[in-house]
Image 1 (tube, rainbow, N blue to C red):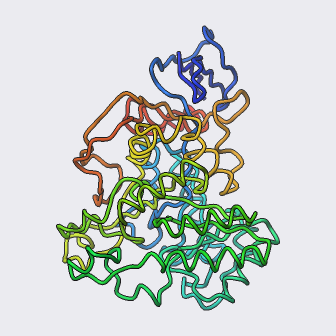
Image 2: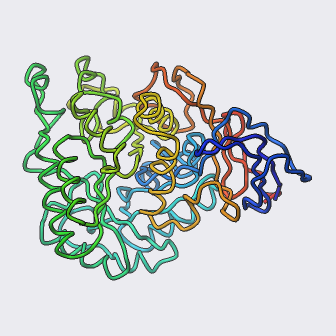
Image 3: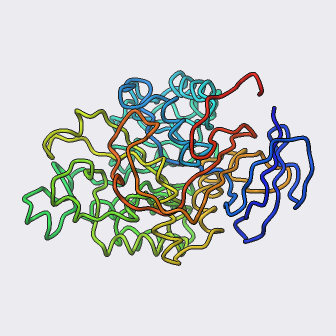
Length: 433
């Protein structure tokens, strides 16, 4: 395996140093380091721990026209990620050891990021019977997070049983918080704009009420809950209360909920149709503040690729979801760093160390430290750029096209192997592994 010196890189704490990578590990942090190695000029670049996405839809098996584990892994690498957690709503559903092991093995074969499968909570995502949680955990994939994302585990007793079951091995239930009885046929955020547009509304209470129920069940069981894609001020209030009470709950916000609002729905552009829906400016500020103060723990992309025909249709028929891996870091920088709501240390925490901790990924999120696996992203914080359509994803439902964002990924290393150079994804040379 090649050795590298990342010359004059700036760390999250503001210090500047050379980073030495040997045999896939960071072996030294010292200015003027000398070694027979490839030197990469990192002057002016931020060096951060590789990003970890706790919420990615890779679509394989079953929907390879939208994405494959290889194409999704390349998109993730381009966005600065060294690990992704693949959601279970595939076809067949990842509700058993055979499917999660297949996803895990395909991730290894792709080689661009660590692909950790998330197992389904219920069989076939039907919300009726628990899936084989224990067998998925004891499999080669060692599944630790379970979610029916895309659907809510709305049955209270079933949710309680799931929390009790995973407690035995330290697992986490990640909930898609959406009361289905309050969101039937919902098309966008419920409010004045939905009434004007004549679209069925998705009320904030549909999210917050499920979270309120789940944190109480989590307190009762002593288990661990993770709340997916928080989008409303009301949900933030519930999570803040739960954390003050000492309940073991973590939460994520997506990049799109940090920067996009319901006003974008006015033109009926289906790229902006998503679940949960884009909310109000008040909600955007609430989730930003919650991310800044730690009420919301992490950023997760909810990367949701769809084929063109699923989006190029009338609003009511369009699929929910947006791609987001490649621009996620830039959106967070634009929304949180540029606005002085977050510093680089907190940025590294929400993008790398904390999602790795929640996911239980021991080799990820270790930051830039001697002895840590060389999972590293180098980004240029000074670059502002307009998002264009040049994705590694198989899908093109990118809500950021034409937007001006700050911060550009330049180089990425996964376990010491360079996967991205000058913003371009490299072909993997396995002969030099």
